[in-house]
Length: 266
Image (tube, rainbow, N blue to C red; front, side, top):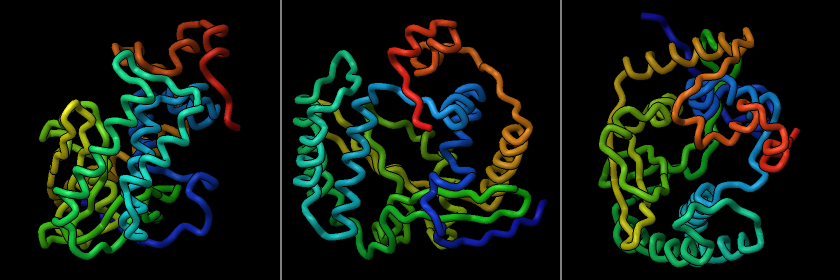
């Protein structure tokens, strides 16, 4: 088994300004190498971001506000979501700005009433990390949502917002939690805390653990992906997922549609 040396430290620069690896970069490359190239190397982004994605970001910010300042997370969410009203976002057929506003406040309030009492000492919230790993040419970085005492155990938590329930396998197989366990080895367990945006708001708690073998397997995957990126091995991986890919107009040869729906951030 390969020896692995880890060193954890705060990044000296914002994570996005220096070359690096991350869970999201690895996930995107494995999903489709061409999507990775268009997103990270070409800097292409949707002209009109997903409302669900923005909703999740506002919920994350509200929970971080709670854990970092003790402030009112529900009021923070409401103010943050009100600030998105004039943005041009992409909504699903069943969603609207008003529906998401009306769902978000009760969802955060439910978390505060039913789940917050389970949390004891908060060790860290929205904390960036940087790992220098033997065999990886680039640092591995990320941001952990929460590390704290949950039900008496030191727990690494990633918060999710979703329109439907998570399956138990999603936490067992979560590469994100495996990656973050590398940065927080003292955590006794890892967990997804899912805020489900359904007609009746629902909160799901999905705990799990990671073994040393899990961590080594993930690092092996990261090394393989890093070599592919360094060698510029980018190719399309067609499948049913192409139907909801932001970059479909490019891959299908529709430059007019690409111009309408994409912008360059670099």
